Image (cartoon, rainbow, N blue to C red; front, side, top):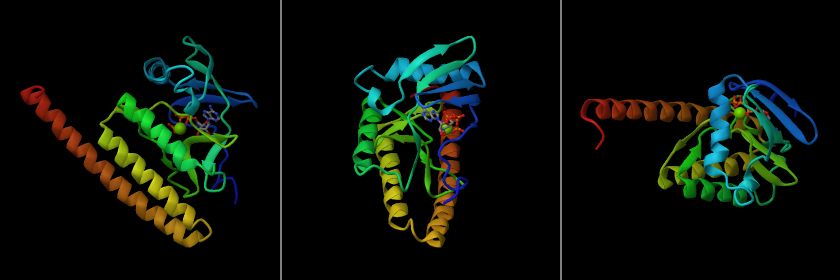
Length: 203
Ligand SMILES: Nc1ncnc2c1ncn2[C@@H]1O[C@H](COP(=O)(O)OP(=O)(O)OP(=O)(O)O)[C@@H](O)[C@H]1O
Ligand SMILES: [Mg+2]
């Protein structure tokens, strides 16, 4: 499998202007102060050191003037061939973390162009880490459950047909269209709710 369909890491992103990797650390420079703050605040608000730290890269240093953060290097992007044996249990630990905090990172999903790689999750020594904390919202336990149920179901399905390229890519395209439609629907509903709140005030 080549690097296009199975990248080990991305060296670009919508939030970062520069990223450098060494064996032990990753230095991310964010494009904006807002993007830097969002990530730093996630740690300050939700990640309790030594308790919740296991699923997130450690922060080794930061510089607010440069919008840069030095993270622990958490290995390569998760794909269908480097899934740890207990991957489902590890995703469930992540699910429990989010349910406890009432928040959810919303871009844990297969990359749009490939059914092999899950974006924003890295794996090192058979442990998974969520490395991109730039897009999260407060969500209910029910929402978080259905998000993780769908993700875990999808990994099971993709994993079961990972050796049948045509089936896998067809499924991926169908799932992607489904995701686009549900995402659009969710945005329309949210816009309507915001409009009602604006007109009549909160409940
Ligand atoms: N701590 C880390 N350890 C290993 N690799 C990492 C780490 N942080 C980021 N990466 C790699 O760098 C890539 C880009 O980082 P990140 O996802 O934070 O950028 P982004 O601009 O927020 O991307 P996106 O377009 O998903 O919003 C990741 O997909 C991953 O391959
Ligand atoms: Mg990312």
